[in-house]
Length: 124
Image (cartoon, rainbow, N blue to C red):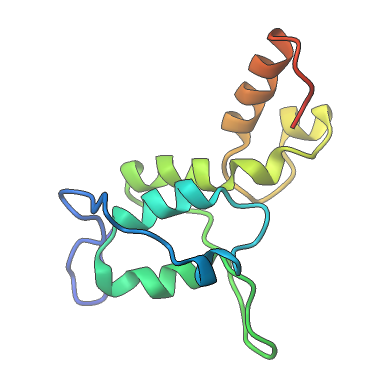
């Protein structure tokens, strides 16, 4: 994926020091894994992070909103799947197995649910 100026979105070397501020974390929608989101944002150029972060936060009153569900680069999409996996945690087994939400991360959530049940743990 490239941005309009034709530079790649993904950094060659992720910025492992990037952190989402406490103020910005508080605005993240509950269906998102904030730690995975932090990793995702650390993988993209600095100049797009703030705008990308907004796609995972509640909009300000009167502001239009959109969520990011798909990325062209496989490395970024894999982390985006982790970001949205919690959106599937509270759905029924049937919905989790067959899909039905637009959110990515279903397969990760399904695998995690199956692993928890094998260990005798309750669902999320």
